[in-house]
Image 1 (cartoon, rainbow, N blue to C red):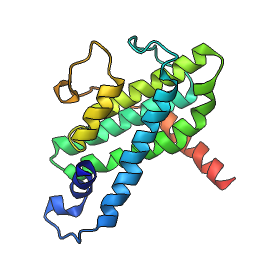
Image 2: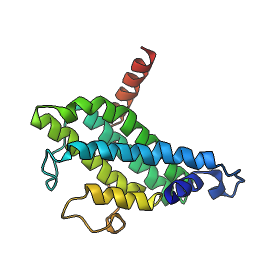
Image 3: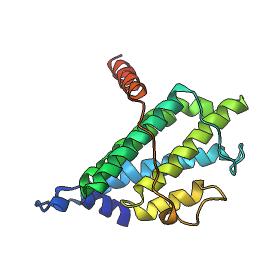
Length: 194
């Protein structure tokens, strides 16, 4: 797809005038590791989204996984913003892949029981956080994967949002909690070791 090709080229050395040996496998990897994973997260969210009010933003959750994924989103937004402001498109694009990996393989997998929970408050927290993350991710990924970002935003936006992700303001975030991110890195290292 066009977004896979665009991401592949933008995140490659070709944007800094270096040679690149084009690889269809590289484009396929982007499609699988970025767009398909993101699409799986969206599909999983939509599977349970009808159990909550989709037009009301949820209050921020204090759950450790929710706090961590929001901190990772803030960290990613900061990296993307710095890359774009310094005209380093490759530096702006690369953090997106890493974030989607964390979102899919760590956050959603560890939160599955929360999505299915009989406790409505717990389910609302998990779904609300996921929607917030997907909505904000659509905004920061729009310069790199514009077509998928538009699709994603259309699926998770609120009625009060603008018609297109490309009409939205660039997100402004507070500095991410380094402690939350470092604690989760250590937890993941321990889980991998075990």
